[in-house]
Image 1 (cartoon, rainbow, N blue to C red):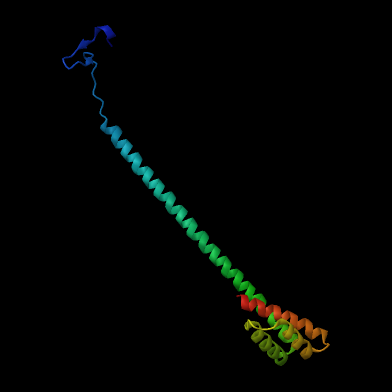
Image 2 (cartoon, rainbow, N blue to C red; image 1 turned 60 degrees about the vertical axis):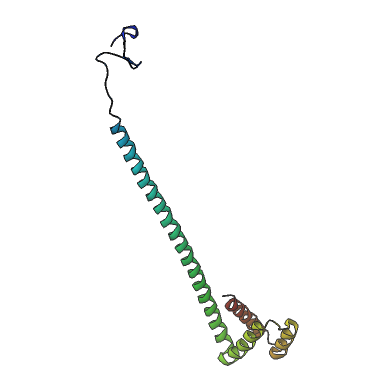
Length: 145
């Protein structure tokens, strides 16, 4: 390599070394940069697809969980309903279930009047009072579903 002071001046005003001038092909660097960009685009697309799937899967899992909870709650309610039916007997159960369900669906039902009517129907039977209370809870759960 030549010393700085030994360089020749070319007519274009550029300094050049004699026999040391090499042309570096930038095309290969551009191709590599373009390929890197394409690879990065593919990676980003893959990441987005992954998170999209995860989000959809998570949402589906949440929906399935809600359905499972609803199914379990309905199953528990039906089981409790059957237990009350067995304890009361089918005729008594059907009568009180129909009566209470109708009253609970009517928004204008007077709670005090309903309690008074129930107390007159039930009398002093504590077992029946407890079963009616449990039946009201079942009806409440059914109406919430």
